Image (cartoon, rainbow, N blue to C red; front, side, top):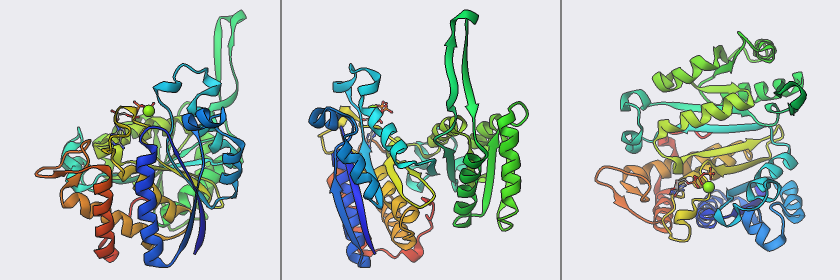
Length: 368
Ligand code: ATP
Ligand code: MG
């Protein structure tokens, strides 16, 4: 297959981890006879320095033409004093909006060698494999009016959804569940919110089109508790923007490490933007010690979600798992009797494992 990939390294450790992900993708392209064309553009602080804007027109244009976009991280102290509208983070929000990406996918899976790093008991976390699908463009964060009302000494935010917005995110959840354990948990607050009652109706109605998928509903407060008391019960979770924001951060503690987590923002036609959950980590930028796994797993998520390359994605995830099982890790992780390596060496070892591994043994088909 021929694919155009825009890479946006951004700031801080962005460049180091992007180099790692591109090397892995190049190896996959070679092994599977694909043509991946990479074109690099500016975003965030780097774009402010180079083009006086966190999201230059040339970057928007390139992303709109691409089959998928890989993003490193944006932000850093250097730009902290700028007014809100001009900050690096605006670049990220802006590009998601320009591309119309309405679904945020956060796979949460603990790799066995890292289980001990979770604050939860190993037996609770072990075997958890969750995909949180968060609605990204509507709900409480974007509904209007959103304002202060001085004459009433009051303030208002609005939780607004169109029926179509709920339908498309719920559809995404059902479709994705088909590639996994065929289970959808819809999370809402239907005992008090009207929007949640409609959300539930949409889920029930949609579920008729997906008789092979098991569905249940959970109130968000109960979901918050069950995520850390019995995470194994979940497969796909689909929920409103703010609920998803909170629950995905909560669920990330299951894995014990921020540096490991990938994230995808996608739309219906498969175009998506893939980035690690962590930030630009300015404290370690340029030192060659950043953990590249969140970025590499984001790249494999791109292969799965945007290109339908399941086997290719499996191979990357298996190579990551093998590398951790061999005890190799960057300084942010801890593995018993492990060996600490830098970003480049970690990537070299993953590439070595990619060359020898057998994805049919891959039990980690989770970064869907
Ligand atoms: P945000 O960017 O979300 O505003 P932040 O700047 O505090 O928050 P990060 O940039 O992710 O968040 O950094 C938080 C801590 O985690 C830092 O100490 C950073 O060095 C570490 N960290 C984040 N990502 C990685 C990584 N890939 N490898 C190693 N350490 C990391
Ligand atoms: Mg940061």
